[in-house]
Length: 576
Image (cartoon, rainbow, N blue to C red; front, side, top):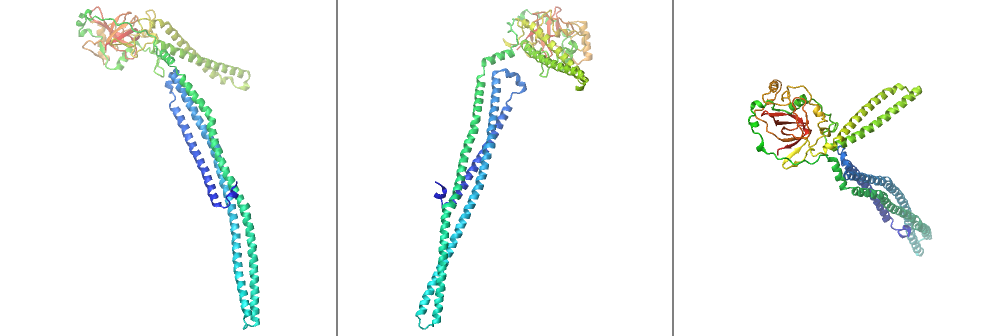
């Protein structure tokens, strides 16, 4: 069935229907454009989401945990999902929307052409019908005039009063009118035949051809919408396997999380290598010699100095013990990681040695390449001047030597740390926890370095830093102790009054807690006091971050010895 035969009289409705069909096609194109915009926006937001939640550089060390690795894999898969949404958006834009726009444009042009042809055909038929109508009106008028002329002639022929000439005139008029009527009749018959032929041709061939073309256009539009919908679905289906793999990747990322493994890694990261603290000994205050305290008058506290500013204390320690601190790295740690617990220090040292070894290998390859280039240039000067690589070669040699020295230094530090592992696991290892209402610590930050664990035969660098000349800025006397009535102490006290802003206290400083010596310490400079392993002392000033703690003990002269000792050599128990 075709529109040309079944809808021969529905020209206007077919025109409206085809126009609405093209509008539906345009509406589908707009739908696709909006969807592409949504897909593009969705992909962009997914990518921004992934970017915003990427681990920061400072969090890179946490990537060893399976949960963090799973989250990174999740972000990667979400990024791939965003890529697939972008693929859908681009494919719809390039393959579907452009084809829809092209089809819509073609259909509009062809429809306009068909409607123009139909309009021409309708005008031709209307013109022929107008001609037929005019011929019919002429024939009708001529027929009436002829009939009237015949009637007038008959009346004149029967009228005896009229002359023969008058009768003959009526006869000629009748004959003329009859001829005009016959001509009009023939013209009407001719126009009627032409109209019938044209009308038959119009409704049987010409107009059906136009309607059939409109039908083809509408079917083409309908088929196009069908193909475009299926094509859009195919675009979505083409990325479905990749999206499914992304989902599988997300599931695998979730399944890869191992809580036990993460727990072990937490232990590996934060394990200090220290052993739990031993029982805190009972201190019987009734057995203490109170006479030492009562005999301690204002004149026996010459070495007790109260520092009003933290910077002054730092100046004292630098003057007394010298500057033997390790340079700090960019993250605030010491270069040899001595501020970390033993296990963590060894871990950092191993990583540092691996990094330096890699740099040494790279620099060695660079040097070998420069040497080969120099040899080639020396063998064939046309290739280049060997002096041009001489400077680079020397610089590479210097850099290689520096890297090797650093590598050797850190290997020595690691060897020393490994040798001290037994000391770190001893029963007298450092405390770093709350127990029985007392706060125990080794360092102000709760950790101690491997270099701080030395026995009597192997003293640390901190002990070596104690060798310095007497300083009037120390405020701690010119001997290892601050004894009552000491002449040297008095001289130093005068020096303090002249050169510093320190003030002597009129009362004995209250102890902040007690400490026990883990290792023997030999004081080698003014401001420090010696101690033997296991000795109990009073803490009167905490470590201010410089590695030294101020302590005191009663001496045999009814006085007190005060001074600084390495914090890493003692185990402190501060009063709650």
